[in-house]
Image (tube, rainbow, N blue to C red; front, side, top):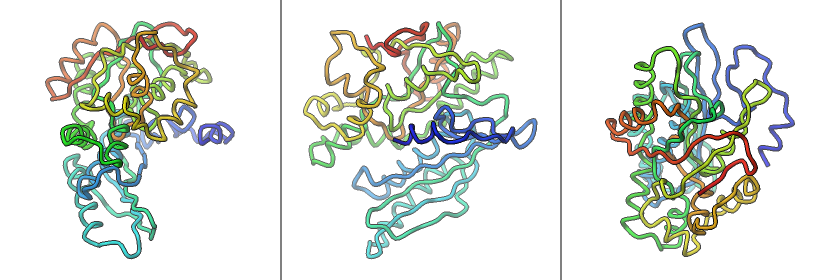
Length: 336
């Protein structure tokens, strides 16, 4: 629904808006000077785990992720809180403490925020980061021949749904929490270091993080390009066997713990995706699964793909090569 609404709205005319909402990018970018631009994003949601401190950590990591996905450095944040009027203050304190712990890890200062009385608990942040205007990563710009990298395993949506039904195993829940609370800072820093060594010509052509639209939803955004700005549409080939799946995620999908967001993603982008006959149904579901604080999805020149994976591994990021960019075909995305 939001996508159709945004298409009908006027685009920003301010020349200092380097990235607006025209390509559903991860964050907005506003030019401040020839050497500096500001990255802005906001995200908040209801609890997806039982422990309030952990929920605060996940919400913070998720909010920070969009800045990292643009290649920026988070510097400040404003908290967004919805909390029941008669809720336990200790729960609220634990949520905020958890968020602060991740913001401290990211060296991002929380400088205020806003709270409302709300029947459902909601928490997140509006985050501001800084970036050089010539080094902004977009979710479009992938080029034919590029290699596709993914820096985290997927499956948080189905595992969160299994948790709500008291059917998540301790091991799968622990793995999901570890993934969701892990900052994308190390991944972004590894890629930025690679760029410094690469010199003037950037080998990184498109970057996004995998969140609510699932891997295939964000892959679709990358594939669509931006013809109005001369960025042609391309197609993506994805190898389902190369993707890392969280422990227990395939079982949760197989047993039918499919979140509403997964079904919405399937309805929205299913026509853009083709599957080889040997791709199991549970894997197809997982590729549409909405993620919380998912990994970075990167389109990079093939010549430096191995160097990127090595750099990511050195920073403790278990990146995988999961596909490639090809000339535009129908369907837009092919999973083999």
